[in-house]
Structures are given as structure tokens and as C-alpha cells.
Length: 274
Ligand SMILES: NC(=O)c1ccc[n+]([C@@H]2O[C@H](COP(=O)([O-])OP(=O)(O)OC[C@H]3O[C@@H](n4cnc5c(N)ncnc54)[C@H](OP(=O)(O)O)[C@@H]3O)[C@@H](O)[C@H]2O)c1
Image 1 (cartoon, protein in one colour):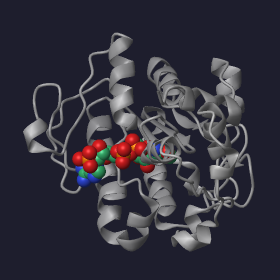
Image 2: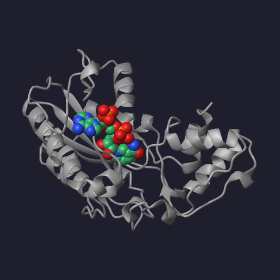
Image 3: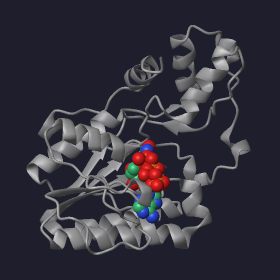
């Protein structure tokens, strides 16, 4: 999702962009082949590289820690080092899950304290990219909310049919739009900025709050919202942190970017649902 959006954003900004694929039938001049589980050493050189490919599902990393580590850490760092060796500036997309979610507004130089395999893998990958010195940057993201997400389209379909929806009252998100992720990545690219950067919403809200905004936006009966606990969904504990926000003081001071309010992001996304 994010890699494709980056491709569009950077192309529109006038960059000449290539986007890797691991699907042989998609390979062409703009889409070079890359499988992070067995990365080749002959990737095309680039001024700026965004490491967006990953196994990004917390449950997959929890159930298959070895095979996902090969992709999220070993393959990722192999590519990062190879391309940095050719002069590329490298940006790794990371996550609030490098922290355990017990406190809000984590600071960028707080020691990582992941509570899940996905967060552990991201923390190790971060350290490897930061070790590239002035060629390495890390951008930690909270939940990226876009209209195409299955959750939102599924809820909208059910509400349209007059069916109830069952959002979690005890699962939280501090969402951002992918366009904001791309804007920060573009600043990092333009300035060849190194170090750690953050992109999160201003505050955590529950999925019930998100459902309320959707129901209001679709002018449906609020009674169709039937909150449930995520305990029932078998989510690993680390996949349901109470806090996902990260402080954005540097992004504000340097680029004038502030963490968006929940209502603003949610209304914006829901307005695009059609
Ligand atoms: N989305 C979020 O809310 C969020 C939040 C925090 C951090 N992030 C991070 O942001 C990055 C992008 O996330 P996303 O939501 O865009 O994830 P996504 O939609 O799941 O995309 C991940 C991409 O990685 C590719 N990939 C998986 N295994 C690969 C391998 N072995 N070799 C090469 N490519 C492989 C997938 O290829 P296929 O299409 O072939 O499967 C897919 O295109 C990830 O690093 C994720 O951890 C995302």
C-alpha cells in the first residue's frame, strides 16, 4: 500500500522512480525484481531508496518469526547496505511497534522496547540502517488509514445493507494518511536527512470512534454499531497496544508538519469512500 503511494507521489514530484516487485510477471524496466528472502546484489543504483517492502502483519511475524526475520531484517539490511555502498541514501519505513505501547508520545531517542516479533524485527532493522550514518534514515509510522482498507470497505458494505458492524472498543489507533508519510519521505529525500523521524496521529482513539465517524458520514443508524472486545479476535497482546503515538517535534520545527487530529484524518478518509 505505502510503496505504491510513494511511487505515485515521487513520480508526481518529478523523480524518476522504480518500484521493485517480487512477482516475475510484473518485472519490467520500471519494476525490477527483488525478493527480500533472497535479495540479489545487482539492484539498480539509486539516489534515494525507500525500504517499504516487508511482512507487515503482526500476526505473521508472531507465528513465523524465523522466515519473517529473514525478510524484515536480513534481506532488508542486505539491500540497505548494498545500495548505501553504491552511494544511495536509504530510508527504512518502521513502526510505533518498536515500543511496547504502554505510554503515549514516545520520543525518538527512547530505547526501543518492542513487545512483539514484528517490533523486534523493526528495531533490529532500524539499528542496521542507522549504522549507515549520514546515509541512513528511519521513519516510524502509526496506523496508515486509507479508503481502500478492507476494514473500511467491509464496514461500508455492511452499513449500506443495513447490517450491524462490530468494531473493537479496546483497540486503538492514531491514524495518518499515506500522503503525509510521502511528504515526510520527500523532505528526507530532498535534504538527505539522516536519523529517526516520526509520523503519527495526534491521539489514540478506539475503532468504535472510527466506526462512529463512518456511520455519521454515511448517515446511518448509530445503533448499527455493536462494539466488541478484541479479546475475542485472538489478536496477540502486542497487536493491541493502548498507545501508538510518537512525538513529532522535529517534523514540526523542520517542516511545519504536525500530527493530524483523529477526526480530521478519519473524516478525510471516509469522505473518499464514495
Ligand atoms: N500500513 C501501516 O499502517 C504501517 C504502519 C507502520 C509501519 N508500516 C510499514 O510500512 C511498510 C509498508 O507497509 P504497507 O502497509 O504498505 O505493507 P503492505 O501493503 O503489506 O506491502 C508490503 C509489500 O512488501 C512486499 N513483500 C513482502 N515480502 C516480500 C519479499 N520477500 N520480497 C519483496 N517484497 C516483499 C509485498 O509484496 P506482494 O505485494 O508481492 O505481497 C508488498 O508489496 C512496511 O515496512 C510496514 O511495516 C506500515
